[in-house]
Amino acid sequence: MSRESADARQDELFRLIWDAMVEAAPPDWLRLDLMYMSVGDATELTLWGAWHEPELRSLDVPEPVELALQELRSTMYKPGEGTWFAARFYLTAPRQEFVIFDFDNDPAFENPIDPSEWRRDIALYPRDPQFVQKWLRELLT
Image 1: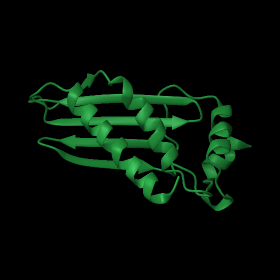
Image 2: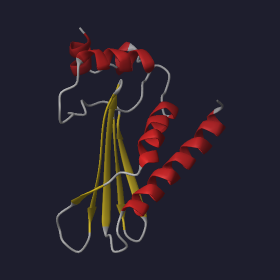
Image 3: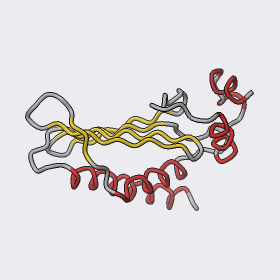
């Protein structure tokens, strides 16, 4: 896939994710937060929303979102550098979008994942030694 077609596909995936977040929320939402973590075959996905109360409430994640996130993670892979372990999507009304990708830190799954998932992830998205952080190097040995 060329860089241009990969960028176009990423734009489509972003749009799908943002639109699905809005569709999952009630009409009077003020803020939506989606957190996705992925290592190997292990994933965690949560979606929260805020209305007029200050606390966040859990929302059901629309089905196509996880597939879109998995594909987005793959399309963002940089040879030798790897891809991100966690992504956080923030959406505030009326439609201000902000996303953070974490390529370098342990995503701290709620339930610890098997070390084999880290090896699987590195096999799927190889990293040159300078892009393997110390904590990850220790997990892999």
